[in-house]
Length: 258
Image (cartoon, rainbow, N blue to C red; front, side):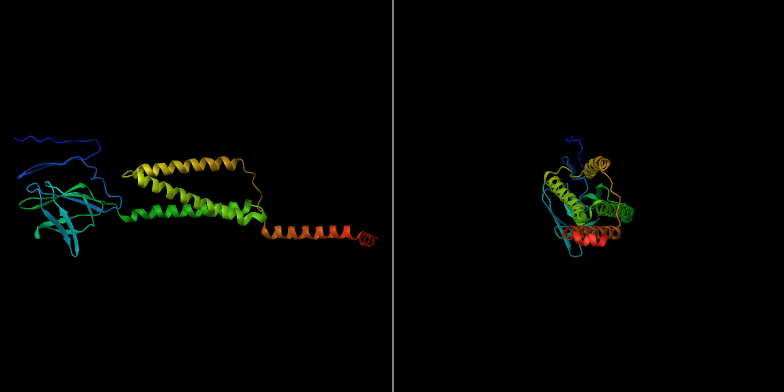
Protein backbone atom coordinates (compact mmCIF):
# COMPACT_ATOMS: atom_id res chain seq x y z
CA UNK A 1 0.00 0.00 0.00
CA UNK A 2 1.24 3.48 -0.92
CA UNK A 3 0.05 6.73 0.57
CA UNK A 4 -0.18 9.82 -1.62
CA UNK A 5 -0.91 13.34 -0.39
CA UNK A 6 -3.39 15.11 -2.67
CA UNK A 7 -4.10 18.81 -2.40
CA UNK A 8 -7.64 20.02 -3.16
CA UNK A 9 -8.92 23.56 -3.59
CA UNK A 10 -12.39 24.99 -4.10
CA UNK A 11 -13.49 25.54 -7.73
CA UNK A 12 -10.24 23.88 -8.90
CA UNK A 13 -9.68 20.43 -10.38
CA UNK A 14 -7.14 18.03 -8.91
CA UNK A 15 -5.84 15.07 -10.92
CA UNK A 16 -4.52 11.83 -9.43
CA UNK A 17 -3.01 9.56 -12.05
CA UNK A 18 -2.47 5.92 -11.06
CA UNK A 19 -0.64 3.60 -13.45
CA UNK A 20 1.37 0.42 -13.22
CA UNK A 21 4.55 2.48 -13.20
CA UNK A 22 3.60 4.80 -10.37
CA UNK A 23 1.28 7.45 -8.97
CA UNK A 24 1.31 11.08 -10.06
CA UNK A 25 -0.59 13.68 -8.00
CA UNK A 26 -1.05 16.98 -9.81
CA UNK A 27 -1.73 20.31 -8.07
CA UNK A 28 -5.17 21.99 -8.32
CA UNK A 29 -5.73 23.93 -11.52
CA UNK A 30 -8.29 26.10 -13.25
CA UNK A 31 -7.14 24.99 -16.69
CA UNK A 32 -10.08 22.60 -16.92
CA UNK A 33 -12.22 25.65 -17.80
CA UNK A 34 -12.76 25.90 -21.54
CA UNK A 35 -10.79 28.31 -23.66
CA UNK A 36 -12.54 31.63 -24.35
CA UNK A 37 -11.69 31.35 -28.06
CA UNK A 38 -13.09 27.79 -28.23
CA UNK A 39 -9.67 26.24 -28.96
CA UNK A 40 -8.68 22.81 -27.64
CA UNK A 41 -6.49 22.65 -24.52
CA UNK A 42 -4.15 19.67 -24.10
CA UNK A 43 -1.69 18.49 -21.45
CA UNK A 44 0.62 15.46 -21.71
CA UNK A 45 1.29 13.18 -18.72
CA UNK A 46 4.02 10.52 -18.64
CA UNK A 47 4.37 9.09 -15.11
CA UNK A 48 7.34 6.87 -16.02
CA UNK A 49 9.58 9.75 -17.18
CA UNK A 50 10.58 13.09 -15.77
CA UNK A 51 11.99 14.69 -18.91
CA UNK A 52 10.85 13.82 -22.42
CA UNK A 53 9.96 15.47 -25.74
CA UNK A 54 6.47 14.74 -27.00
CA UNK A 55 5.10 16.01 -30.32
CA UNK A 56 1.56 15.98 -31.71
CA UNK A 57 1.56 15.96 -35.51
CA UNK A 58 -1.16 16.34 -38.12
CA UNK A 59 -0.11 16.89 -41.74
CA UNK A 60 2.14 19.96 -41.49
CA UNK A 61 0.95 20.94 -37.99
CA UNK A 62 3.41 20.32 -35.15
CA UNK A 63 2.83 20.91 -31.45
CA UNK A 64 5.80 20.30 -29.17
CA UNK A 65 5.41 19.48 -25.48
CA UNK A 66 8.36 19.62 -23.10
CA UNK A 67 7.91 17.15 -20.25
CA UNK A 68 8.98 18.27 -16.79
CA UNK A 69 8.46 16.13 -13.67
CA UNK A 70 6.18 13.80 -15.59
CA UNK A 71 3.83 16.45 -17.00
CA UNK A 72 3.63 19.41 -19.36
CA UNK A 73 1.78 22.70 -19.26
CA UNK A 74 -1.53 23.08 -21.05
CA UNK A 75 -1.31 24.23 -24.65
CA UNK A 76 -3.98 25.58 -26.98
CA UNK A 77 -4.06 23.62 -30.22
CA UNK A 78 -6.43 23.25 -33.15
CA UNK A 79 -8.87 20.30 -33.02
CA UNK A 80 -7.53 17.45 -35.17
CA UNK A 81 -6.73 13.74 -35.08
CA UNK A 82 -3.06 13.87 -34.09
CA UNK A 83 -0.29 11.30 -34.12
CA UNK A 84 1.58 11.15 -30.80
CA UNK A 85 5.35 11.13 -31.25
CA UNK A 86 7.80 10.44 -28.41
CA UNK A 87 11.39 11.28 -29.36
CA UNK A 88 10.36 11.08 -33.07
CA UNK A 89 8.79 7.63 -32.59
CA UNK A 90 5.04 7.24 -33.11
CA UNK A 91 3.40 5.66 -30.05
CA UNK A 92 -0.30 6.21 -30.75
CA UNK A 93 -3.03 8.64 -31.78
CA UNK A 94 -5.15 11.24 -30.03
CA UNK A 95 -8.29 12.81 -31.54
CA UNK A 96 -9.17 16.07 -29.81
CA UNK A 97 -12.24 18.17 -30.56
CA UNK A 98 -13.13 21.84 -30.42
CA UNK A 99 -13.70 23.48 -27.03
CA UNK A 100 -12.50 20.44 -25.10
CA UNK A 101 -9.83 20.10 -22.40
CA UNK A 102 -7.78 16.87 -22.49
CA UNK A 103 -5.11 14.93 -20.67
CA UNK A 104 -2.98 12.69 -22.91
CA UNK A 105 -1.48 9.92 -20.80
CA UNK A 106 1.45 8.00 -22.31
CA UNK A 107 2.45 4.67 -20.79
CA UNK A 108 5.07 2.15 -21.85
CA UNK A 109 2.54 0.30 -24.00
CA UNK A 110 -0.21 2.71 -25.09
CA UNK A 111 -1.64 6.25 -25.31
CA UNK A 112 -4.80 7.19 -23.44
CA UNK A 113 -6.95 10.27 -23.92
CA UNK A 114 -8.96 11.59 -20.95
CA UNK A 115 -11.32 14.56 -21.41
CA UNK A 116 -11.16 16.81 -18.36
CA UNK A 117 -13.96 18.91 -19.86
CA UNK A 118 -16.14 17.56 -22.64
CA UNK A 119 -15.97 19.34 -26.01
CA UNK A 120 -18.84 21.44 -27.33
CA UNK A 121 -21.70 19.43 -28.81
CA UNK A 122 -24.16 22.24 -29.64
CA UNK A 123 -24.67 22.78 -33.36
CA UNK A 124 -23.78 26.18 -34.77
CA UNK A 125 -27.26 26.56 -36.30
CA UNK A 126 -28.62 27.17 -32.79
CA UNK A 127 -27.06 30.65 -33.10
CA UNK A 128 -29.33 31.50 -36.05
CA UNK A 129 -32.53 32.31 -34.05
CA UNK A 130 -30.54 34.53 -31.69
CA UNK A 131 -28.99 36.55 -34.51
CA UNK A 132 -32.40 36.89 -36.21
CA UNK A 133 -34.01 38.26 -33.03
CA UNK A 134 -31.08 40.60 -32.33
CA UNK A 135 -31.23 41.94 -35.91
CA UNK A 136 -35.00 42.49 -35.73
CA UNK A 137 -34.64 44.30 -32.41
CA UNK A 138 -31.82 46.47 -33.77
CA UNK A 139 -33.86 47.47 -36.84
CA UNK A 140 -36.97 48.28 -34.80
CA UNK A 141 -35.01 50.33 -32.27
CA UNK A 142 -32.99 52.27 -34.85
CA UNK A 143 -35.94 53.11 -37.10
CA UNK A 144 -38.13 54.11 -34.15
CA UNK A 145 -35.38 56.35 -32.73
CA UNK A 146 -34.81 58.07 -36.08
CA UNK A 147 -38.55 58.61 -36.60
CA UNK A 148 -38.95 60.05 -33.09
CA UNK A 149 -35.98 62.40 -33.49
CA UNK A 150 -37.24 63.62 -36.87
CA UNK A 151 -40.92 64.05 -36.03
CA UNK A 152 -40.41 65.80 -32.67
CA UNK A 153 -37.69 68.19 -33.81
CA UNK A 154 -38.44 71.70 -35.16
CA UNK A 155 -37.99 72.27 -38.87
CA UNK A 156 -34.65 74.04 -38.37
CA UNK A 157 -33.21 71.33 -36.08
CA UNK A 158 -34.20 68.06 -37.74
CA UNK A 159 -30.66 67.40 -39.02
CA UNK A 160 -29.15 68.29 -35.64
CA UNK A 161 -31.49 65.94 -33.76
CA UNK A 162 -30.75 63.14 -36.24
CA UNK A 163 -27.02 63.63 -35.63
CA UNK A 164 -27.61 63.63 -31.85
CA UNK A 165 -29.59 60.40 -32.16
CA UNK A 166 -26.74 58.70 -34.04
CA UNK A 167 -24.23 60.10 -31.55
CA UNK A 168 -25.95 58.20 -28.73
CA UNK A 169 -25.14 54.96 -30.60
CA UNK A 170 -21.50 56.05 -30.89
CA UNK A 171 -21.37 56.88 -27.17
CA UNK A 172 -22.78 53.41 -26.38
CA UNK A 173 -20.09 51.75 -28.51
CA UNK A 174 -17.38 53.81 -26.75
CA UNK A 175 -18.77 52.73 -23.37
CA UNK A 176 -18.80 49.08 -24.44
CA UNK A 177 -15.23 49.28 -25.76
CA UNK A 178 -14.02 50.91 -22.54
CA UNK A 179 -15.71 48.37 -20.29
CA UNK A 180 -14.41 45.48 -22.42
CA UNK A 181 -10.85 46.82 -22.25
CA UNK A 182 -11.16 47.33 -18.48
CA UNK A 183 -12.53 43.83 -17.86
CA UNK A 184 -9.81 42.28 -20.05
CA UNK A 185 -7.01 44.05 -18.19
CA UNK A 186 -8.40 43.24 -14.74
CA UNK A 187 -9.76 39.76 -15.56
CA UNK A 188 -13.07 40.64 -13.90
CA UNK A 189 -15.13 38.46 -16.25
CA UNK A 190 -12.52 35.85 -17.13
CA UNK A 191 -14.27 32.48 -17.46
CA UNK A 192 -17.45 34.18 -16.21
CA UNK A 193 -19.41 34.98 -19.36
CA UNK A 194 -22.71 34.77 -17.47
CA UNK A 195 -21.56 37.49 -15.05
CA UNK A 196 -20.66 39.73 -17.98
CA UNK A 197 -24.07 39.19 -19.58
CA UNK A 198 -25.85 40.01 -16.30
CA UNK A 199 -23.74 43.16 -15.90
CA UNK A 200 -24.72 44.49 -19.34
CA UNK A 201 -28.35 43.50 -18.73
CA UNK A 202 -28.31 45.64 -15.56
CA UNK A 203 -26.89 48.58 -17.52
CA UNK A 204 -29.66 48.19 -20.10
CA UNK A 205 -32.26 48.13 -17.32
CA UNK A 206 -30.90 51.37 -15.83
CA UNK A 207 -30.91 52.94 -19.30
CA UNK A 208 -34.53 51.85 -19.85
CA UNK A 209 -35.64 53.38 -16.53
CA UNK A 210 -33.93 56.70 -17.38
CA UNK A 211 -35.60 56.81 -20.79
CA UNK A 212 -38.97 55.96 -19.23
CA UNK A 213 -38.66 58.85 -16.76
CA UNK A 214 -37.67 61.26 -19.54
CA UNK A 215 -40.49 60.21 -21.85
CA UNK A 216 -43.06 60.85 -19.10
CA UNK A 217 -41.90 64.48 -18.93
CA UNK A 218 -41.83 64.91 -22.70
CA UNK A 219 -44.49 67.06 -24.34
CA UNK A 220 -45.24 65.30 -27.56
CA UNK A 221 -45.47 67.45 -30.67
CA UNK A 222 -47.88 66.48 -33.42
CA UNK A 223 -45.94 65.45 -36.52
CA UNK A 224 -46.22 68.10 -39.24
CA UNK A 225 -46.23 67.14 -42.89
CA UNK A 226 -43.11 68.68 -44.51
CA UNK A 227 -45.14 69.83 -47.53
CA UNK A 228 -47.80 71.41 -45.35
CA UNK A 229 -45.17 73.04 -43.13
CA UNK A 230 -43.38 74.43 -46.19
CA UNK A 231 -46.69 75.84 -47.49
CA UNK A 232 -47.42 77.44 -44.11
CA UNK A 233 -43.95 78.97 -44.08
CA UNK A 234 -44.46 80.43 -47.59
CA UNK A 235 -47.80 81.93 -46.62
CA UNK A 236 -46.25 83.48 -43.53
CA UNK A 237 -43.48 85.02 -45.63
CA UNK A 238 -46.01 86.53 -48.07
CA UNK A 239 -48.01 87.95 -45.17
CA UNK A 240 -44.90 89.52 -43.68
CA UNK A 241 -43.97 91.07 -47.01
CA UNK A 242 -47.43 92.63 -47.35
CA UNK A 243 -47.17 94.06 -43.84
CA UNK A 244 -43.77 95.57 -44.63
CA UNK A 245 -45.12 97.07 -47.87
CA UNK A 246 -48.02 98.63 -45.99
CA UNK A 247 -45.63 100.35 -43.58
CA UNK A 248 -43.34 101.61 -46.34
CA UNK A 249 -46.15 102.97 -48.60
CA UNK A 250 -49.30 103.75 -46.61
CA UNK A 251 -50.78 105.86 -49.41
CA UNK A 252 -50.65 102.92 -51.74
CA UNK A 253 -52.52 100.85 -49.20
CA UNK A 254 -55.20 103.53 -48.81
CA UNK A 255 -55.72 103.77 -52.56
CA UNK A 256 -56.12 100.07 -52.76
CA UNK A 257 -58.57 100.11 -49.94
CA UNK A 258 -60.66 102.82 -51.68
